[in-house]
Image (cartoon, rainbow, N blue to C red; front, side):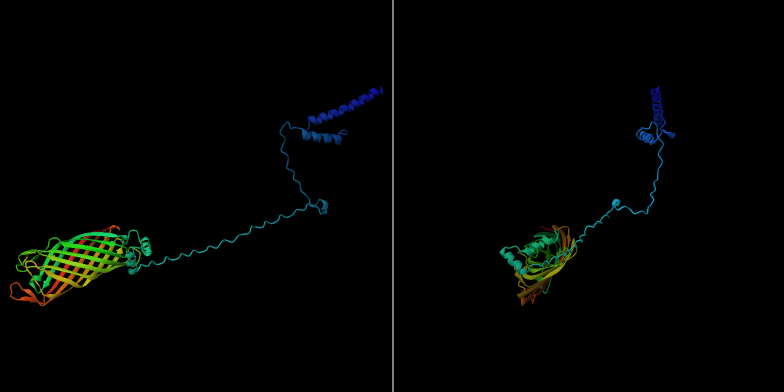
Length: 381
């Protein structure tokens, strides 16, 4: 009997424990009812169950819990002190000084000096190249005419020739059309040779005896020159001067059976100078002249054997004004207006009586004037 009573008590206690656990599991959201049987062991189990349980429904958002730490004046235990080492300051990388730029000093281009005439002549005779000349050609403009080695020109125009004398046989006037051809060869930009031939196409003069009749007269002028040039700069607008020696010849021919006129010839060696003044790369003014201090003058017999005197003394002066219209280095148009004056002075008396008289002319003096206007084309290479 005692055993039965003890068994019932144990069963009752176990049942109460099971009911409590079941209630905790079934109603976890409610506050636990405090009872004498619900000790700390059961509360711990309930907490563990709360942590491990997967919520069946969406739980309300947890409230934010603020934890305020109160400063305590109690000394901190040295054993639990955490020493925080200050972060070392970063040492900035050393800044290298910027290199100071070295100014580049441009050396001025040395002035290019033209070789002397003697040096050029010696080099031409020896067949040697002159370094200064080659450098000069490299530094001038490619369209500069001084780079031309060969130049050929052709021109036409009008001419007027007048001879005034105290002898009727030497006085006349003539107007005619002209044709001129010429050329130049430049061995260097500073030394060259040139030549020109000019002729009157349709020229005649009045007869010395019968002024109403006309006599055909062929008039030819020829020149051969040795030229030297000097330029005052490398620009195409640089001024230049051309000078040198000139040999000039003039032939005046009438028919061999003409009885009132004789053929004439004048030739001599002189000095020439020409100044070129470009106003633009495409246009250049030219002016200059030549002087022949002594001209060899002679008279040739035709049907009339005339000797105006003896020991003739002659000289000549030429003046020229012109311009060049440069189309390119190879092509140019030009115009020339030139004037020539030649004086022939004879001594003694003429060997032929003057027309209409019975006396010859004495100390015959002849003043020959020529005026030419030419328009032409020049080709260079």
